[in-house]
Image 1 (cartoon, rainbow, N blue to C red):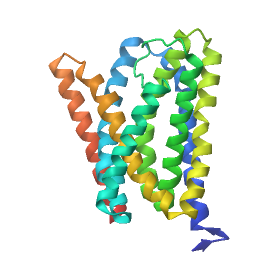
Image 2: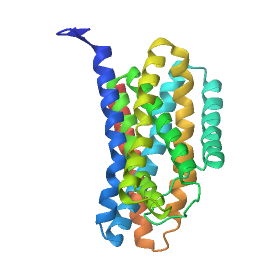
Image 3: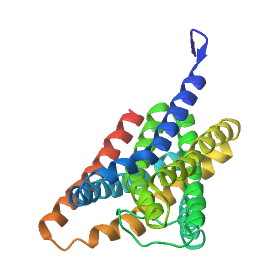
Image 4: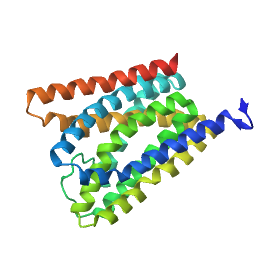
Length: 256
């Protein structure tokens, strides 16, 4: 299929690359964090985290795993999901890749090691994005959206860690952007490998689902449980469900 010399494969790659560039530029959102009042910022982040947790859970169980089941034997899929969960645990535990979701969070003395961990995280995000667009544009956009919703609070948290780790605002933005740009390289590699090898796609989809489940259950949902106010906790539950529902309808559109 081609239109004026541009093939469907070219269009998919453009969408994949554009999505990863957009996600990389989210690293500059730290500027907004430094402008907003702390009360407004925390309230906004809380709702984003709630929606993001639902989107990641929905993305894993309604989006990535069903797609993986179509390509693999069922038992293999669930083993790979567990493997992805373990991989993300290892990355967080041994590379000091933390998911900080507040402007002021625990300060690590290993700022540059944290940047390396975040770069690895963004590279993996890129692999997932690139591979997802090989499956289809709708599938890729839905996957990218789940990653974007998680990246917004994540990047604000990263910016805060770098500032409190001793970097100036300009340096924090610059290093955070450099770390985020690894998503573009991951996208190019993921797209190329998924196009050339069906095995790579079969392995990455369930492993990515395991990663989504890990981030939602081990990093995001615990943040929601810290809310003691019943009204705010109920609102967070509503946003969590909205995140799941969004991914449900997005998956339905993909399969229609």
